[in-house]
Image (cartoon, rainbow over all chains, first blue to last red; front, side, top):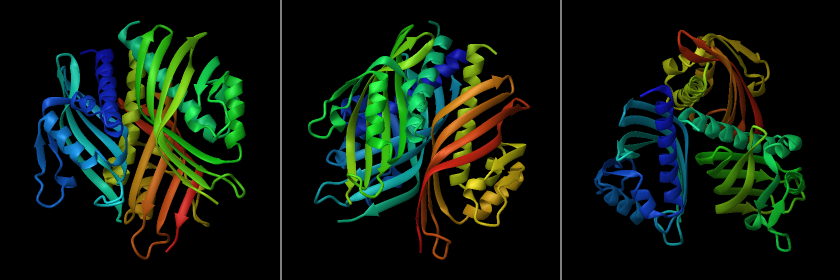
Length: 147
Length: 147
Length: 147
């Protein structure tokens, strides 16, 4: 892979993550499935309520999980400052700073959440398209308001 | 256009949008005029007070409009997660996530606005420089405090 | 330097600044020293308490200063919208929009600071690695809550 090809892969992964965030906030669930490898592994152990499992496997499974938590929630998610490394023609790693701002409708489990952290991810190129292969969110801070 | 040239165009458009935001927040109005094509079309229908027209044509006209609304307002505007596609040697499209935080002086129409949304834009290369050709802001959320 | 090499340098500087922010928020002080040229000059005159000097010279000196101010503080720093220009094979300039959100433990000099501004920087390539050579932060706004 030459320099231009490596930079092209980095730009493609940035746009992939942009779609991940935009599809979340626009509730475009089919669009969000398409950003993941079919066998994606998402470590949500940092996000879990007690009794929920911390690892989700499968693009459709993750989006179903995600949708169950935020379909009725007004969400804003932004990513920042990517550190993407292309590790082969078809694999890459990335770290992203993240900020999310959620507001629940009346009767929700909380009123607002304002959080900050980092995504730690790997990517895979499948049929010419980069996809998220593994994803884990670590948090620096969570500010919650109730009722 | 080869890969390096396409990536160069994408980087130039990112820096163009960076100047758009920085000139806004630093009140550099001449600098802001220069980021637009002279015949730019800006759809401000989502931002309008009743009775205002939703479409503004012309770089100078838009900046005059913008200045009229925020010259005395302390503003912070950030763009995130661009999805830029180069569609020919001289045309491109882009989507940007956006966050804006405004604070009015005493006596203003409101006290603060904290908003979130997406810019949907097209770009044109004129005399070797990329410019914003059309711009429309859609909002996910607007939080306003009064008096 | 050809187009691909120039874009590679811009991407390297973006990832350099990403490490600057992430090492700050993760309190990885050795990691933060490594983003600076050994003789970095940091103009902190806008950040100073009365009686403090406004210019700090040296990577270790700056990180020691920084650590003294925020070691016990929960910090979130994000950079946005870089305008990076490569000025020679080994030098570059950059402007970044910045947002920082700090929360002090009980007994701190304030409770929270939420700020916005721009970094104005220069970079130097040393032994094949880009480093921050000079850095100055200007602020658009600082919102502070006490006790």
